[in-house]
Image (cartoon, rainbow, N blue to C red):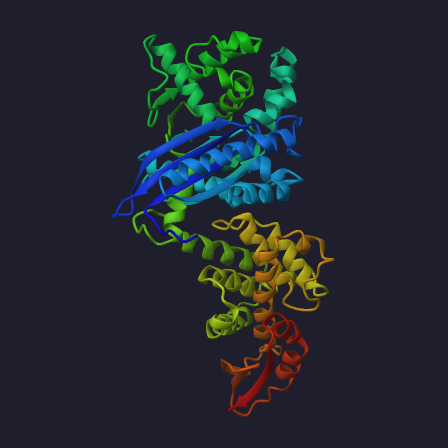
Length: 521
């Protein structure tokens, strides 16, 4: 995304609600919110428990909302970034939704992992609540999932995303949104089972303060505010509002005593639109307090959408003040995955340098943006991690490991690009009958072909793992790309050239030029 203006818009495509904020970016890298909007969409409506399919009616509601949000963003001349969470990432028809969203609104919806969602939430909360210098537990109860982070000074020490959300559990345990004793008991038991391990790990890590964000926690805050003061205002800004465990337990008792939606709508402080899902949400929140042994928490007025803004500013290097640095997070996650798979560090570093040199030398030929250079770098570092599983078909194993890893800082599409590029560094070319590849948009397929073609050439230049090739240079001529190799003194590059000859077909096919090699000592 290139930011041509100083206005940005972030859209949080959530399970329960869609949120829009539009911000004006200041010269010092901070931002001011100049517009905001929210709509209850219920993307997962009709999917009992686990979210497997977004129904046509829900897609229609979502598209109408996104069109409206786009009009608002355009009125501010704002660049839009939209991020989708659990309802979209878990659905079998997410590609249909993403395609329709782009086709009808021009908005490219990014699907992010639960861990990436947690990171963005943490970024947002750090901007709103003064906990940067404290070891803090931060959590966000969404419609489909709940994210937890224990962090200190911008670094995430423990992170987990769990499939417990207010909408998901309301549909699972409270049919027609009616409360029963059995539903309460079963829901509470389910939540306890889901979060017990995370609570034990994070308590062991330790934290001194607790902050939370989003709908359920905001709703709890408004009800507690109303309980404290009958003259409360539903428009009150709750950022940095604190409440205690005893206050939470009081409103939980009130909510769960109101068996129907109509009765819950009359609870002071509760938004009527949340009356159906608040029982599940309050059980989740109350159980978190119990298992994490929380006595008091602070509400953050910022959450995922503000995290998206901060993340976008970091990507564009418009803000040097926001921490942690995104590039460091992405590099650190690649480093962590590669090291956990016992990769050949020297070989991977060696061919990564070659891959990036080819990318840089051929910029006019491949016409790719600089952001794609980072995907190539990641794929080059990770291309051989499949050996951790088995030597045979290790490229397939590399794909599987990368695709199913939580690479912090990367969204789902970026992880897919890296995984496919690593998968195609050898053997078969990308083909239409490869299900995972063919499901990708045409522009993504084209990008993967270019990156994997470059990676194949780079990898072939260290076929013996003896670093025979010392340096390379690419020169584009009329119908030829000339690859000039400088080799180690008194060495024989026969195997490398043989490997290059075997692997150059994809390069020649993608770039429409033959590849020739010259060798110098």
